[in-house]
Image (cartoon, rainbow, N blue to C red; front, side, top):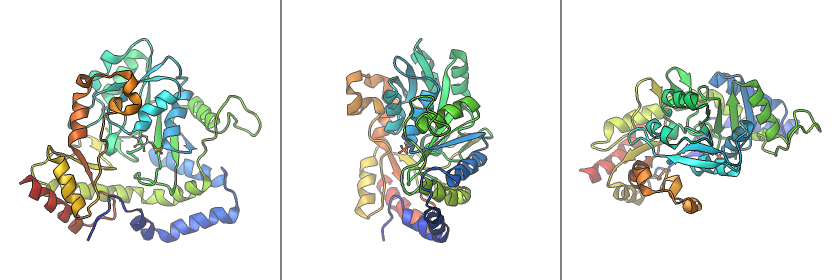
Length: 364
Ligand SMILES: *Cc1c(COP(=O)(O)O)cnc(C)c1O
């Protein structure tokens, strides 16, 4: 017996006919770039979230970069970013010429700590990028209040939170603009790289559309310098086939999380505050014995992983900044103690029992 950390094959087998026919229909139509299939997925995803515009792009990192550019953010600007996230959230800010300003996270929710944001705002601050980390919404009320008080834009990084809900609103509909990744392992995953930007703002949507397609809305009318970051048609067909299954998969992730919650003893588990819906892209436990737990799981071929081993400001690429340890004590502690357990929708209760048994034994 063994349990991989994610099992994309199991999911494919459960919907094989739909995926195969989606792929073949793209090949049949030999329409490989743009076209009806991309439009159709963009409309379906916008409808699923409940927002006016969805612009498909090449991946979730480009989505953040393009959203920043559409907001006019660039050289000399500063953007608030949580210290605990995937590199893209910070890297995208650097790639538009701006400076990420890192903020520590909350120990229980692991998302950006709103109380620490205001003291880092300067005249150059233009935006906040809250990340709905692991599938749990960030504290959007507090973040939106700060943004309003200081006239900042808010870009929600929803790469891990497809369908998560904050006080009755799906994440991605609260800030000015939001970005998604459809990297294969994400809750809604393509079979390659893919991403999207969503917004209710007509002008921003138009700018994102132009920026992602060589500055044009109609062929050969290049209104600005853009780039090639289009959503691949094959990926759009696959995503369209998978989207109707997303809520069922999310429900299963929540069931798995509930089993973990009930069966794991004396260990810090993910929290879900009132009026938030978690979508458990990752189920992340916290323990001082993290390394021993990780070794024991790997010993019996149970997949597990650390998201992430270091706070962003302490990655080699940010060495030059000289960020201080004392400003990121919580992120640092989490990085030393967190462990992500398998939580893909095809897992069975017996498998959860096995994982919990091994962890509980170490924790006794
Ligand atoms: C996956 C991810 C991204 C980037 O998505 P890609 O499609 O891999 O470029 C950005 N932010 C977060 C929080 C992510 O988890």
